[in-house]
Length: 224
Image (tube, rainbow, N blue to C red):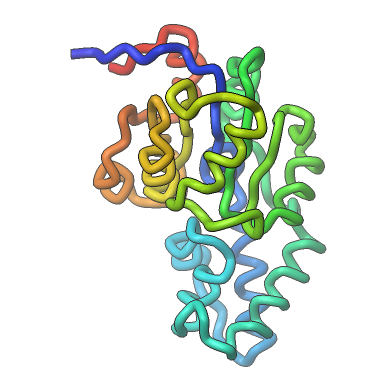
């Protein structure tokens, strides 16, 4: 039976795998860090599976060390330096991204990502969508998703209660953060970086096959 969700006053969007396809540029930055520290390159598909929990965790997975390992500091700096210099070599908006942002116009639009803030802003500006957001939260602004801090601090800034907001993302981190923040709905998009099984296991309120389905959901407030 279809469930109706009240139209939100704010929509929180994840970035990587939700609004943008950044897989190739993330992989390039990760492989740069590996190669400059005498490690073998990894396939893009492997690096893709590491994405979602922030740059430090991504690199810890690629190097096979704990996130707080001291030896990770130099690779992490190499990763950030390379990525800031090459943020949108291959990165593009995903199909349906611009339409979804347009459909959310008139509401508060928030970008909530675990990607480092500086790189996030470079990407948003290069793709011409920075002005679409009322506020942006990225890695370094506070605890990363699935902790609710990113969402709650942004919603407080735009003066919207979580019960009037939807969280849209492609990973369990997004669903977990939306639930922890007590958002009205968690909307999961399947065309992201992770296998569908991991996303379904997070228990999102609504699962979309693609971002193309979000405008109708925003308009009608009904999940199938």
